[in-house]
Image 1: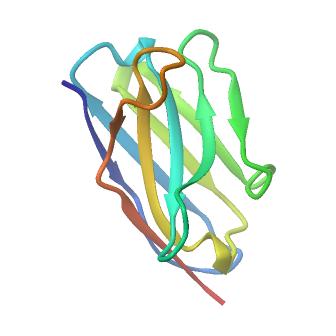
Image 2: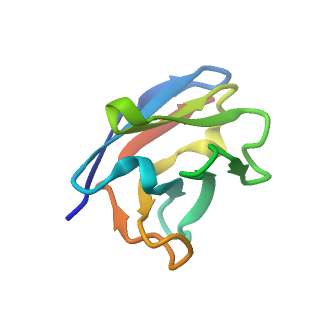
Image 3: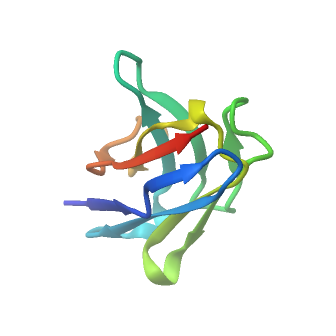
Length: 119
């Protein structure tokens, strides 16, 4: 029903920046809350950021507040994660997710994109 495809990951040195994109197809993107998560080997999936469908309100995990910015472009059915001042501990597979049911949790997930930050 909804397909999400992340892109923009890669290898960057500490202090650098990356911009992740998540392109959505199917459904009505503009009515979805969108989120970014990340996961490292042996760790639980971690919430990073979210943006609402209604007024573009944003929410961030403490670990990334002030460094990461989530945004969306409904005309392009795309959500972005601008990552600045990257740290080695940001290394993870980053996933985007769509909350279609507004509060029922995230219903659809992308395949993920690898972000590696070297010291």
